[in-house]
Image 1 (spheres, each protein chain N blue to C red):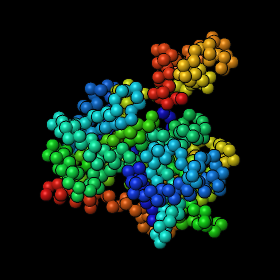
Image 2: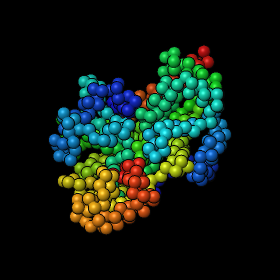
Image 3: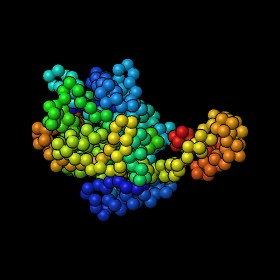
Image 4: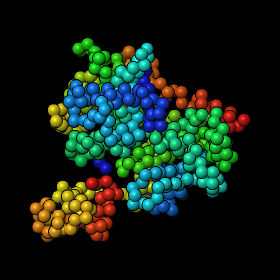
Length: 247
Length: 221
């Protein structure tokens, strides 16, 4: 990426270190460790990352990394709070940061949910940051805290910008650690055409007829595209086309 | 007043959004003759499915929509990246959690200002962009705009910092630029357009102070 990546205004050394730490995470096992370090650094009760609509190469429809206790995660699954949790519902549709305090707790189910969360150690105050990614995936990064309300009200507004930046970097970290990354390629129109027809089931000879090229030339373009996409074979290259929306 | 309507609240504001899609058809297709798709008198594109946040100016007396625009994060699908990439031919990428993109800015043509004067709906919408941006912790808003907007930004005291090189798309010479999101920018816009008080409804209502206190008491109760 070149150019215009912005930095938070209150740019301080610790924050830069933190971002660098996030950037240095290379594999899955380090993710949870990093979330725990964040939790400690900001005196939080919990830190959680949930993503949906990740590029289909991953084969999962939901990705979760959180510092919640095992018992809360079990409870959450068992009660299917995935459907009820108002933070998730809102976080995957709005793009504005969400203060958990905005949720209407007059609904008994929602009140029970937040009450239980608190019993299982989730903080009573919380902020969530929606992230939208380049493949159309969505993520939500949430923090919760039990610090005194007066202190929370002072800190939360100041945290918004830092956590916007952190949330995005954590999302990128997960994509990287999970091996989901954009092929760093630009296919030429010819290469794209030859792959597309192949995706439509045409042989190199047939594509040659369609595009008025020799079969050999078609294979040449397909091979170039395959190499650029870092694909093992033609089928793999076509799969990557779909995964990364290069069509 | 301005309603900020996210995908989570669309169902609450169907009527306003329907007015907006019709206004967009009138402005971008009928008046400006842009290359946009209009169906059933409504202009809708693929970015409207990307959790866009709409800022809509509503006449308090009549409830009628006066103008609107659309915000999208630059980390996800957006027009500068996916449609107007040619404006950044140097290989630059605008992709930051602190930069959102504004697009589909339009004002009801019947409310056009006197020549040489600023439309107060225009400045109200600009103020709303800054208010929402500050709420979300942004630093900058990026937008693609045509020559007719350059004068308006200058008059509103919210000049664009141009990026890339202007490009001719169809009949329109198109620019891209950055806009400052700071309390100072909000103040200057307020002075230029006569909006001393917050224009966006709802950002305040969900501010931590009041509602959190409510959560607190009900959870411990």
